[in-house]
Amino acid sequence: MKKNVLSLVLACVITAGSLVGCGGSGSTQATTAPAGAQETQAEGGGETGGESQKAQADSADLSETDKIIQEAQGMTMEELAKKAIEESNGKTFYGVGNSSRGKSALPLFIEYLQSIDPSYTMEYEWQQPKNNKIFEQLSADSLKPQGTFAMTLIQDGNQIESKMVQTGILKTFIPKEWAEANGTTAEEYEGYLPLQTLNKVFMFNNTGSAVYMNCWDFIEEGSHPLFMDIDSEIVGKNFLYMLTEDQYAGWLKEAYDALDADKQAYFAPVIEEVSADAEDLGLGENGKYALAWIKLWVENYNAQTDDGPICNTLVTSSATDQSGLLVYSKLRSVEESADVSKNNITVAAYQDGYEGIGGYGYCHYLFLTDNSPLPWTACAFISYMTCTEEGFSAWGKDMGGYSSNPEVMEATEATYQHSRGGYNEAGENEFDCENDRGYDWWTTEGKLVLEDPEYCADVSFTVGSWIEMLTKYADSAQ
Image 1 (spheres, helix red, strand yellow):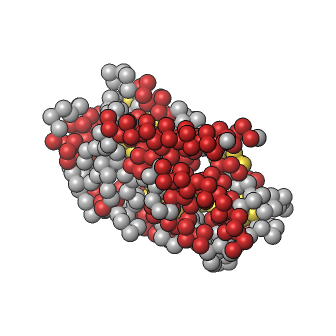
Image 2 (cartoon, one colour):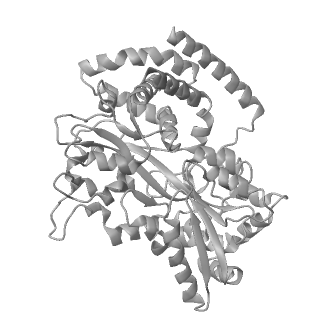
């Protein structure tokens, strides 16, 4: 009976989705991975709000912020810095973001401006709304003739596109030096401006006998991986959306094929159960493997409110055989003790012979607000963060966060040597889990699933509704 009800509701979802598609512009924007991957940001597909930077520049209906951005994109960082000094000297700069580290970057930016003009001063305040309230906060601020917030550092490409970009609340600025480092120009580049890509990776406590050599092992019978609830952090839902994309569904199929016969027999009925749904949702030939993985994940993960507690649990000696999907950099804060050690953790994808997806990658993006009170200063700050090692240092000091600027990425690794982050002063590999293999490795051999805002937006109603039904059934079953 439950399956019949699910199929009926799903049919309604698909019908409604097609009607919505007929009335919409169909214009969404794809994430492009930082340079160093097989495709650089300059080569990525998709368009911000249905328009490339060039199309925006040609528009006859430019806001004052649009006009400033158009001019700023042809200026060097030092030229922008001088404009910022003129605009904001003695004033207060307000920023808002999903990362609190904007507050750490701002004093460094002020020092940079003071290196040009020693008399320059600027106060600053950085807010970090919790529980996904950043979209509400920016929407409310956009109603003012002049906003409070000069710029934002924000995540969740799906909501950024639908709530912020298409509505004109946020504007993309592409720094000249950033474009050059990525082999493109501001006029030709299509997409948002990412500050960095972060990764959430599969880890498990290795003090017991449980084996996690395949991404399907995390959803087998009796497994309840720790995961930040998809209603607490929406990028987790985007991760599930992305699994249905052809490439990543193919990775899941390959990992399934690598399982032994007994494990395949356990998962096969679930794959068969969702095969009709995959067809109804218009997914590719391997879509049923993605839906089966998603179904078992949603029904079995142990919901948490933050990645920090997940990490703190997994590194304890009492967390035998437990696993999780969490931000890689959380390992940085682990303090060794008799019962706690980073050596109690294994990064699943680092094992020889591991099969399937190793984790999930998503971006922090930088935008100006359309009613920014300090647009020149915002442009200069964004340029500073994306084009200098020092500007990125608030994020670059930790593994698992990769600058979108290949030159900054290289300089950051040279300074912090994250690839040897687990080595001690004696040159011994003390904590192997901290030896970050880097963006290039994670997006190829590590099979990191990368958020694509265009794809997430396209399937958020169809696949998203299907996932919502799963969560309701899972909640009611508890």
